[in-house]
Amino acid sequence: MDGPTAATIRATLQRAAPRTVPAWRQLRRVWSRELHSRPALAVIRLASQLVADGSWARLTAYELVACHPGGIAALTPSSIRHLGRGLADWGSVDTFACYLAGPAWRDGRLPTRQIHAWVRSRDRWQRRVAVVCTVALNVRARGGRGDTPRTLAVCRQVVKDRDDMVVKALSWALRSLVAWDRGAVSAFLFEHGPALAGRVKREVGSKLRTGRKG
Image (cartoon, rainbow, N blue to C red; front, top):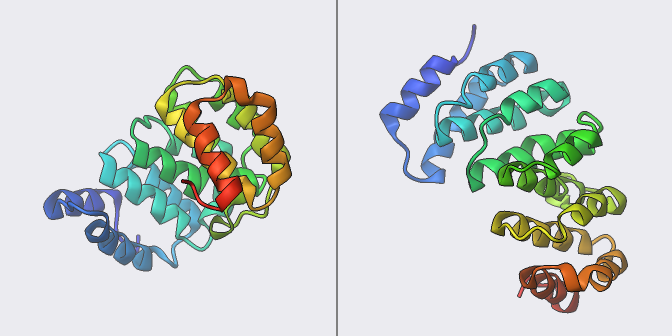
């Protein structure tokens, strides 16, 4: 097999022990160049072997797939669930949701029922994954083209959730939709205002008024 293996990536991460994202990303970019011509399915299999090997290995796995020319298009619901197993920290959750699960959902490769299963989970990280997946629907830099129905269908399910990770995700999701549908976001705040966390009302309200989070 051309390019690095999961074993060589693990060994390099252990030896280099990156302390910052820029230092780690230098390594990941080298591996992405080496894997560029490999079949997307081979890269997904390699990534699946890395997700249980610590935060740097997990982030490497997600970016190797996301940065491969055919990576997102080759994902399946099963491979996405496999790549998302064991999520338990903020950075990994957001990378998984923004780089893999969200784009796959946006492009019809992950069914909405999976997003709704995550948002109903007792696991705070799965609920955050579901809400952050909506960012890929609405942020232009992530390929978003605006999707009010799917975004608000997820947001409605966490209106009363008071887990800090989910509250922050809900604020992010609604602020991301403002660029496409200010009216829908304003109506959502009006309808659910009494039940929403103060952070959500404050940050989304500021975005609507000033264009900034506040």
